[in-house]
Every structure is written in C-alpha cells, then in structure tokens.
Length: 91
Image (cartoon, rainbow, N blue to C red; front, side, top):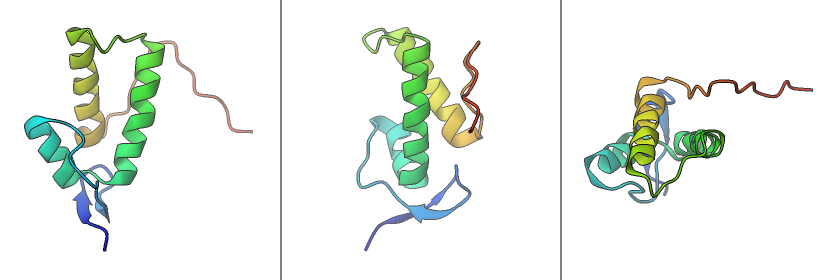
C-alpha cells in the first residue's frame, strides 16, 4: 500500500514520496508533508529556473536561491517568477 501524506501544497491527502529526497530538516519536512504530485510540479519549476537563470549547482549562491524558491513554492504556494518568461499559449 502506498504511503500517504497530508500534502500542504495540494491541500489534500495524496501519495507520499518513497524516500527522503532532500537532506536535513528541510528534507524531513518535505518527506512528511509533500506528495509525489507536488514534488513533480516542483521539479518542473526547478528545471525551468535552472535553465532560464542559467544556474550552476556548484555555486552555493545558486543552490541557496533554488532552495529558497523551493520553500516558497512548496510551502507558501508562491509560483516561480522568472523575469521576461512568458508561458506558451495553449492551442
């Protein structure tokens, strides 16, 4: 049986992550309160941030920015904003 969590991002009970994907206390918080679906949404935004802002994961400042954005997205419901980015219009 799949593990479920009360997902703070989705605001409902949903399938939880299989294991802790992020280190430390923040990783435990994510594991305990973020669903697979919400984590998948974050991964899309993370990829967009890394690509559009040309982030280098070897740079600690870039990693810190990404972590801050992750917390805002997952726990405060704030969407990732990238200056100049215009999402494609649905056809």
